[in-house]
Length: 293
Image 1 (cartoon, one colour):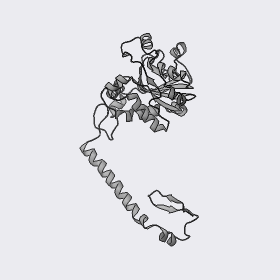
Image 2 (cartoon, one colour; image 1 turned 135 degrees about the vertical axis):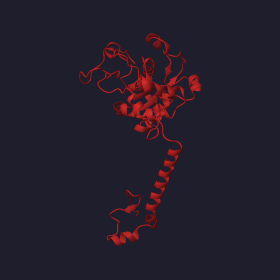
Image 3 (tube, one colour; image 1 turned 180 degrees about the vertical axis):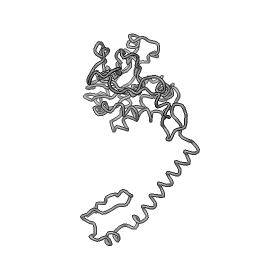
Image 4 (cartoon, helix red, strand yellow; image 1 turned 90 degrees about the vertical axis):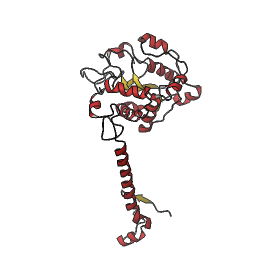
């Protein structure tokens, strides 16, 4: 009969109690010879790894991902840049995620959410789209700083815990193939993939596609943005079985007027999704009277 062995904290293996010898001497005699040197070898490897990290830190000292000031660890923000992020915390509109100036109790909706309900169920964002956050998004989106998705994605995972707890599938807002070719990567897909990995949720990069090339949204009014995105998104027939009956977590970098996530959510709901939640790193916040996102 095979003997079950338990991995101990120091890396050695110990037999289970049913098969273990009854005396300490017998246990010592039964221990594999490799276990006698596994511990010092493990310590040597840890020391070597730690020394290598220290050498890399000397040659390439870690810097702030926003301003390049010295930091204690890689992929981090310095204290000044951290203070420059306007984190969004409760109280906020439970539907749109826009912050309230005062706490009037749980479960409140903003006037915008009541007057013009969004297509999606809930939206959450890490922070306001200004200051340090704006700089980070622009570097990720236009500066080929794809490594920023590691830090931003982990922050989004924390901010979106209530959404990921209910989600069945993580999808990015897709780019049209011509825009993807110019940018070389989709920042929303990089963030969505990191969130899926951190939460253990399935990730489907191609379940939603952008079939119509649209104008840049910058400078357009809210009605113009909605018209610009009419019919832009599509769920391929082969992907409908993956979408049907599932609650989707739709990921993007920034939420502004939200015409984009509304159009994408509409396509997912038409394909049979039970609901769509939206998670972004930043969102535009003015005076709390934002329209649907």
